[in-house]
Every structure is written in structure tokens, then in C-alpha cells.
Length: 276
Length: 349
Ligand SMILES: Nc1ncnc2c1ncn2[C@@H]1O[C@H](COP(=O)(O)OP(=O)(O)OP(=O)(O)O)[C@@H](O)[C@H]1O
Ligand SMILES: [Mg+2]
Image (cartoon, rainbow over all chains, first blue to last red; front, side):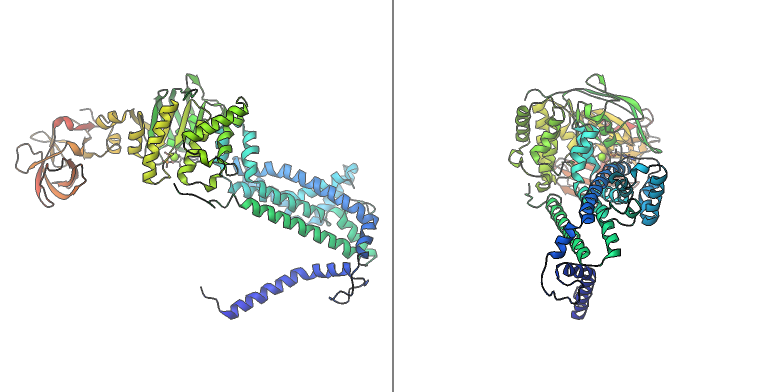
């Protein structure tokens, strides 16, 4: 098919606009965190400073928040994977009665407004589980509800793409059903699992709407700390900590991408096939 | 080779229904230890289902599966003395050839590591895949993958090796070569082989005994020769080798006729005469059982194949020695065969 040059140009402009639209806020924040000015006035940096970054790292609520968020995200990710993977497996491989209904139950939290979900957990903790309020476990448990739909969907898609005969072959070769799952099925879905894990971690690390209901203002996760600080003070310290989060997320996304590409090598099939 | 197992298999009254579809309707079958037994039948007749029931990957609704004298009807797949070669191969894509083959030795921890390694090497040599030990399945050809799949099952030294259409994905030349190899591996290991196929020439070449299946039942089980010479049903007669089948024998003044040819008296729903049993005679010859118009003749090297049409329009194939006929397309000749060459099915003769 021949493409007209005008159409090509239009395509290019469109892609450029979308890219700018996506990246502009990130660039502004990155610039603000390394420019000496208190308020960013131009896109051309008037110098370079690490002052804001070191201020951010010295600010107590942020330091507590980073650790808190990391703990919550790690715990929520582990629980979501441990619950979501068997759920996805049961939906994909066994003929459970009412599988369709179960599937929609797992997806339901997606359509629940997070603020409402947050308030529900708040009500639950305050009335029945006061000890969970403000703890890593309490926040992580609430996050699991948000993460499960993604884990079930991603792992389910991975399972749908893997050959069930492989598992039968493993059992035929003497593996118990559990061994077959760990030695054969799990390696087939390690990429969906990795992606689900990374996605869960980043989502949980970044969560504000729900978390804000679940912790007292003095010890909070990092995004909540950012939100609270921004209400009092708009200096570039907030930009600096946001920049750190942006860079960390990009690095993680990049590493995940590399891992997926490497793993893709043995999936794409015959790369050096020799004929019989 | 030593230490390979071999057990008989006894299947009695096995049935299997999926939803409302009766896929296996009361199968009974005896498979001798150390024999090469083929399950032959058209697509969808339940061959794979029966094989999976033997492997323990599927459970029959009723019936008993006895392997080596022990009732294994309720034994889980991973505890059965059988191994299955899947139609697709089902090689583990994340493992090398050697690790694929070693998989079944690692699952039962009774095999010491050193012995496992030498057994993997031995079996890869048997299937001539030794030099591919470190490759991933994705980088192998179809024939090589099938060899690895067979090696992976054989290395466990099962009492019974179950093979589901192991050659059907290969091109014809490779199929012919692998048939001889399969036969050789069976003889060298002495293991009982049960092989599913829908290819009758493959079954006839490989098997000591063939069970012909149709629509979820075993129509007949026996040696290729038994099936060819004494088919027990119309289905077997038409499925094994070529056959001319004639319908509806009706009594007439002289003998009985079907499809415009005269047959010896007797009752039958259908009759079969092999192409090589048919002779061509002049149309007015007294031995002629009826006239046939020659449609085509073709020379195959070993024989001349003549296709004819009887007065009622039925096509008849005759396979004659080269030089046995000079008939040309368009000629009318007499069709003749011995009484003994006629096989009858349906109503008792
Ligand atoms: N798990 C299943 N659920 C429902 N129906 C099934 C299932 N497995 C097999 N069947 C049906 O049982 C019938 C026999 O299937 P089977 O795979 O045993 O045939 P086959 O003889 O091996 O055929 P082929 O030569 O095409 O492989 C088919 O009609 C198939 O649709
Ligand atoms: Mg089949």
C-alpha cells in the first residue's frame, strides 16, 4: 500500500502532539526539581541544583513515606499474586460452576470508585478492626482489592495462551498436580506474573484515593505525604520527590521490558530450525 | 536393551460420555504384553479418548482398565505404569531436549542423578537425537520433536507406551522412515506399544495386532492379515485395504444378484470382493457374472488397475497382473470372481 506524504506528515504531527501531551507534565516536574528557582518560570533551566532533592530526602514524612509505601506495595503485591494466581488458574483450567459470575466478582472492584472503597475500609476498620487502621497490613489488605482484578486478568490471559497439554504431559511423566503446576505451568506464565507483579507494586506504591482514609496524618505512605505537604507548601521539594518516583518507575518499566524481550526469545518459535 | 518393562492391557466394558454425546460405547480390548497394538479408526471415533483413559488423563464412566494384571481404573495419571506421547508432542518449551527427557526421571526420585544422565543419553542415542541435547524444542524440526517426545516417554521405561498419532504431522517420506524406526524401538525395548492412527497402511506396517474402531466401538481386533482376509463387518472390509462393496442381495431365477452381478445363493445385506480377486473375461463368456463397461485403466508397475461400471451403475475396481488384460476404456467385458472370494455381511449367510 502506498502512503501519501501528506498523510505521513499528519501521522508524524499527531504522534508528536501525543508524545508532548504525555511527557510535558513529567518534564515540568523534572525541571522544577533541578532548577534553583522556587517557582519554575521558563523551560530553559537557569542552573542546576540538587538542593531540592536532598531537602526531599531529609524531610521526615517523605523518608517515612518511602519505607511505608515500599512495605505496603511489597506486601500487597505478594498477597495479590498469591490470591490472584490460583483464582485465575481455577477459572482457566477447571470447570468451576458459575465461572462467569466469579469472573465478574473479581473484576467488580474496578468499577467501585476508590474513594468509596476507601471509606468502606475506613468504616470496616474503625468499627470492627481498630488495630488494622494505619498499619502496613491494613493498607496493603485494602490495596489487594484494587490489584486482584489486574492480576486475575493478566495471569488469566497468560494461562489462556499456554498449552494445557503441557500440564497433562507433566502429570503423565510422574509429576503430581502440584509439581506439574510449579515445574511446567508456572514457567509458561512467568512473564504475565512478572508484569502483574510490577504493575501491582507500582499501582500500590502510587495509591492515594483509597489510602488516605486508612492512616493518621502523621505517618502516611509517600503519595499521601506528598498530597498533605502540597496543601501547606508548594516549594520544589515536592517536585523533587515526584521526580525520584518518575525515574524509579521508568527504570523498573525499562527493566521489565528488557526481561520480557529476553524471555520472548524462546517463545517466538523456530529461530535456528534445521530441516530433517 | 535391558530393564524395559512390558505389560498386557485389558480393557473391559469401558464407556465414556461427554455431555449427551456417547464417545465410547462399551469397549473391550485385550492387548498382549510386548506387542505392537494399533488403534485404527476414522477421525472422531474416540481413539484419543480411549488412549487418555489408559493413561489416566481421563476417567471412564464405567468399565475397568487392567494393566499388567492390576486394576488401574482409579489410579492417577502420575502413578500409572504408562507413558503417553501426545499428538502435538507437548514438549516443554522452557527446557532443553535433554531436560525434557530427564523430566520424567526427576519426578520419581528413585533414579540417582548419574544413572538418570546416562539413561537420557542412552535414549537420545536410540532415537538419534544425541547431538541435539542442548537445543530448545522451538529450534527442532517436526520429526526431531516427535523423536524427543518419544524419547521422553520411553526413558521412564513404562510397561506400556501409548502413542497418539505420532507420525501424522510428518511428511510422507519421513513417515515411512519413522515407521520402521518405531517398529525397531519397540523390538529393541520389548515394551508394549499402543499406537493410535487413522492411517491403515501405517497400522498394517507397524502392528502385531490392529483394533479397528468406528463410532466408539471396536469393530474387530486381529492381525493385519486376519482383518484383510476375514473382515468381520462391512466397515472393516471397506476400511482395511481396497474393497468392492455390493448392496442388497436379491434372489433371482438363477442365483442371487446385487448391483447387476450374479452371486452365489445366500443372504446378506452387503457383500465384498477384493479388487485383486476380480478377473475380466469376454462379455459373452459363460463364467461372466455380469457385464462391465471399462471406464479407465492405469498401469502402476506391479499391476493394472481397471475401473468398470456394472449395468446398474455401480463402480467396480479390478487389480490385475500386468498383461492379464487388453481391455481399453469403452470396451464391455465380463466380470468374474470365485465364490470363495465373496465376503458377506449383515443377515447370516
Ligand atoms: N473433553 C471433551 N469434551 C467434549 N467432547 C469431547 C472431549 N474430548 C473428545 N470429545 C469428543 O469425543 C469424540 C471423539 O474424540 P477423540 O478425540 O477421541 O477422537 P479421535 O478418534 O482421536 O479423532 P482424531 O482422529 O480426529 O484425533 C469427538 O466427537 C470429540 O468431539
Ligand atoms: Mg485423536
